Amino acid sequence: MKELIIFDLDGTLNASKMPPDEEMADLLCKLLAKTKVAVISGASFVQFEKQLLKNLGCSSNELSRLFLMPTSGGSLYRYEQNSWVQKYKNSFSKKDIDKIRQAFELAITDTNIASPDTIYGELIEDRDSQVTYSPLGQEAPIELKEKWDPDHNKAHRIVSALVYYIPEFEVRIGGGTSIDVTKKGIDKAYGIQKIREGLKINQENMLFIGDATFPEGNDYSVKEAGIETIQVSGPEETKKIIHELLKTGVPESKTPKG
Image (cartoon, rainbow, N blue to C red):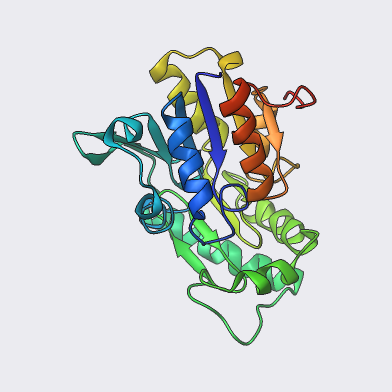
């Protein structure tokens, strides 16, 4: 068994903005009984609480092995003395946020990729250490997200335009439709490195599981960092991998590395 198993959230443990189902929640608790687990996502910590934590029935001892990294590694939370404690945070200044918002508006105009008439929630959300654009709105139904940009063509075009206006920031495709912006050097590889240093775990004793390990995907930096990765098509495939980990301690031998 690896010393640390790291998961992406949306598209890996659950459908976008939906809680993990009962089977997944149970599997995570069983995995936490055996090893340390981290979950890293572009979501805010508030979203982690609403989407993940309230649906986990793990014991306090199991939760003490769980690490949460909201905003793509821009912050880190640990469970200590029955509460979640923030260990670090890389916040934007107001000037940065204003510049990023303007860049999104310019990129959308340049690419001529307009949002539909009906929007579900915020288009551009300030998550303190990350700014996220969701063309359908943050709370859009998953079936609409799946139809909006299935091949990520629209997202890639917006990302290319954004990089022109804000080259000093990290720009990545997030979930099914979202685009995330963080400070330069702040990505999932950064967050995982912070945990690795704190726990003094060798890189070969870590495994990452996510659905966006393709170039410009928000999991790609982990793969580039040389951490063993498994790309999944969704939660059902993730469940199979966790079952294998619980049974044998290792994923299937065909798992690609890096």
